Image (tube, rainbow, N blue to C red; front, side, top):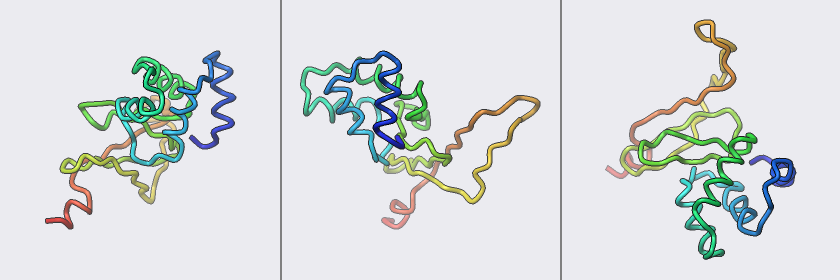
Length: 137
């Protein structure tokens, strides 16, 4: 999320109530580079708000995705991860440690069309072993 006050305004426009629990979800996401899963976000928020439901967390994440404040990543077959950084970049999944890492290749240009189809955005995923895992061998 680029700007939390702007995000709050967009959420208000959707009609979603800005409860303390939803504000905590925004706090967890703000500046997070670990690409947390909905479950991880739920666990973090639940430590402060034990009565929060997973459904509230998931619905809030889907609304945030819908208004363009976060991106859902399908890089991991086991779970959906979320990225609050919506700027152009790719992702790398380490198959050993499971970490998702932002990758900034020299050319991030997205073609305007592919095979006659209009392109709005793209997500590129790389898979392998991260530098930390390779160095630990």
